[in-house]
Image (tube, rainbow over all chains, first blue to last red; front, side, top):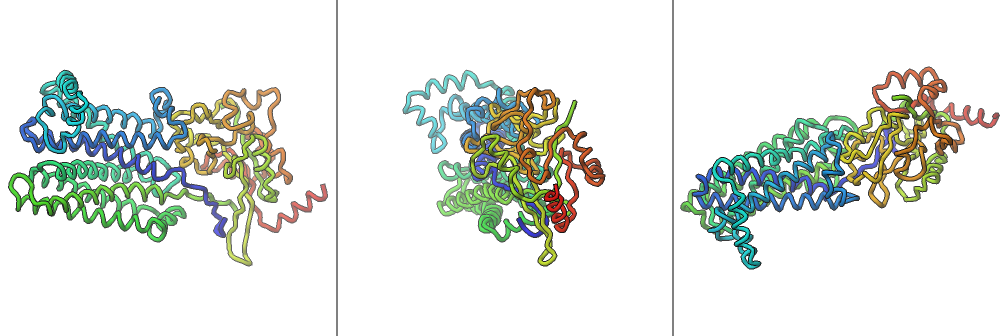
Length: 344
Length: 206
């Protein structure tokens, strides 16, 4: 109750779990995209460093999709119904139904690519950090079987590319995470179908590239030029995200709920996450390409110098955290438009 | 749609006693705190001494094109063709709470089981009931919605919309017809706190 003739409705149907789901789904899409791009630049696998990045990227995609799946299932009142989605989710008008199919499809493509890049022709000679899956399989005595399966189901030549490119459909389809919110007309902060999906996709791609790259730089020999190219992509996608964040902020509107959301973002409990988010984006946007450039100039073909490498990994991780916080604050600052008591 | 059921509400007659909300809870056995299929809110505007306030009794509006049904991934929410009542099938509901965001009126409620429950216009009793019930107008012994039945000021009525229109003032009927909202509730214009005394006097005289 207040003295404005407005009736504010309860909110808080979704929380951190949903933010985790939305974040990892989009990160998975970005990581898959990174894997395909890295392999496309590898001269059909001749550049080991590129293949290593692709291997990490597909692994990240698989893990991210799995985390997103677990997060959304844990959020549901009936997780079993969620698992039985082909039978239970029948309304294709809902973005949750569409999103579930996109997420599961991405998971299948990511799993297949992970198998192909960790085992068989592309994985047999792998070494360094990215070979940890192979080493685990080896300890379990499963690497031989996995190699055989990978080689048997891996199509050669253009067939491989058909699969890789088909996987890009659900990877880019993770834009649905934005549409899930943008379809809600009652929340002015979300109801921006031309901005929010783009923001979630761009920041998801940034997070996917950054995560795969951070793992490559941290645990493997990273090609300096490759790192420079992909950190530039991180910078570019973060820059797009900043532009879309600005658009979202400026189009919030002067409705009661829009004003309330703005207040929550600038004065309330979300103020600190917003500051961390913005600082994180700036640090990663400027720092990552800059550090990669320093590494490129100072190192040879392989990035050396632990200070630069550690700083670059930190910068990339900060960017990833910032992209998570975008979802976090967008979810928690959501306010439903209040009802207007007629005649009061 | 063969018939559309809905509500008529006169805020001038509502004394804010919450009998409708309690009656609804009792009828449907909803005893959890914070789960209210129907609730009464007091809304004020202005500043003292020019303060105006009114009571609003709210529940599911049984919208013509319910946004909750559109977003429900499981198709658990149905706009019934027979009587226009919006029902939820709890066996199909997965408890994602998407409908909670989509509904502009805060109608979807969630109990400790996390599944959606809301007003079913007393098609039957209990959360999720009424899904397979015959049309309200075709039921042999239709339940009179508890909220309207227990309303001491006769501020709340339930029935087919064309019948409720007969009860409405010209202003309320026009406002309902001209409204862009697709909600099925006719609301009398609030005429200020002064008139409430008249209603009370009228009730006493009756």
